[in-house]
View 1 (cartoon, rainbow, N blue to C red):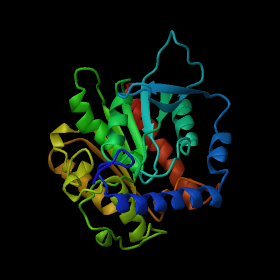
View 2: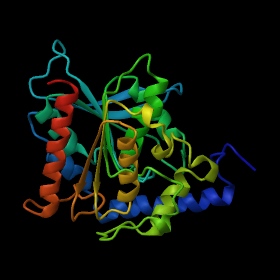
View 3: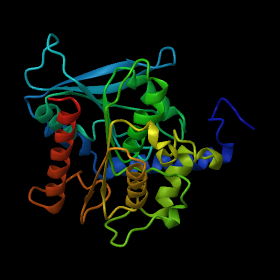
View 4: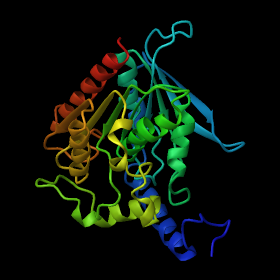
Length: 308
């Protein structure tokens, strides 16, 4: 029995269980590091101007939050290209601004405007709510990027949504960092030879069940980019993954599929690090080195895509 009290994709007891787990994850994330996002924002260069924006959505009266990062010297009379970025969250956790450092570095070093966009979270708002928010934001124009669940969204935005909005938007580049690409793979089969602080299978199962509870929907290209027609990918697809991450094999499989079909793919594997390796890093550590590689690769790709 469906009700306006909970999303129609779930049964009542199923939703209560997922809602309780989501609250637990959100609370644990905050209690374990309540200043995590604040620290990210404190690392933003003073040369980069920030602005909070509210982007109109398809729903009357509802707006999508976002943070704009302007490159040094930016003026409205000299408009710059835009990169739209989506943070990781397992499609569940409220983590807007978690990638403030990455967004500001891209703005400063590539000389482009970066929009760090939010999206609705499960289980309160399961699939297709997040891709719908990505579509509404995408109407702004642009290259796209994302980390983790945001990386999944970036691939959807650059393919399914780009094709749908081809009359109003052109996306020449997607930078997808440690994405989930295939929700049909059983979580127990998501393994790597040399795991590094991997997400436990029960956690992956919860994220999947909260976001795509209907098994029949998990092969929908708007949910699992692995099922997108290779011809629908943009001019350049960058898939950047960590070899200690259990999501690496499916990301690698997608990259190889695109290569086999003649698409322009940039594949890079960061050795010896975990999913989310770029967060909370100490200067001089292996993770710090890999994060600098990530920023450098991203800046180079964006400059090439926008001919800067």
